Image 1 (cartoon, rainbow, N blue to C red):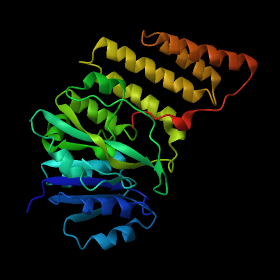
Image 2: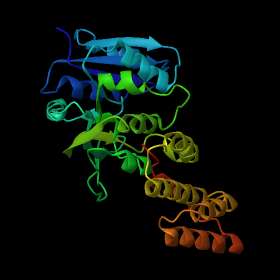
Image 3: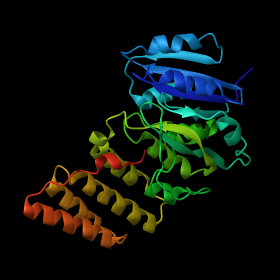
Length: 303
């Protein structure tokens, strides 16, 4: 039987987390799926972690040689047979009704992506309190997506035909690859979501803070390429907030760079008072010779 849903999992050196992720797929109340695990050159025990699951004919395993996450995910998509493609990172996990609840939302052909809310867990799987956040937008979300990527990647289910229309992940990018994809999809399709956390998103075990500046730089490139069709207000909001974020990130190490970032944010009308406050506080610290503690670990950029 041809699976309706293909679950793509690109894994690299996550053997310690992978069994939890795979078990959560197997535990789904909706059973007509296949799981494609692309092992992108792992040097840990990932092959051994996968081996017990290969008796299940729905689980397929392919070992590649350091393709990078864009190409590894694209390889999984190319191997997929389902009408819908779901993504599950090897360090995350799903709640049992995840597929069932989200597939029910694909009632109209213009809906290209259905996602859900998430719960945070730490490296050991313990729950982390979620800060209060407004509900994400739905429908035609191009402007909102330009400002911020609000889709948890491991929650997303995408119509296969959307990839045929807008392309797959950009192999030139290795950061913010989902942000780039969602912007392209949002120009053609509507987004919907289940307003409940159906994903356990693991955080705190990576080196995200050291990549934040790179993520912001990548985001600028993606935004520049995607801004056609985005409203001027959303463009101003997106650029201003991204420059401010980079300013706060860089305050912990490079005050001159932070000053330049806040100055660039002031060029846009969105929340100029916040940009001015960031500029003023950074300038005071620079004049006093202080290096404030960075807030980088508390920031996320389009993830």
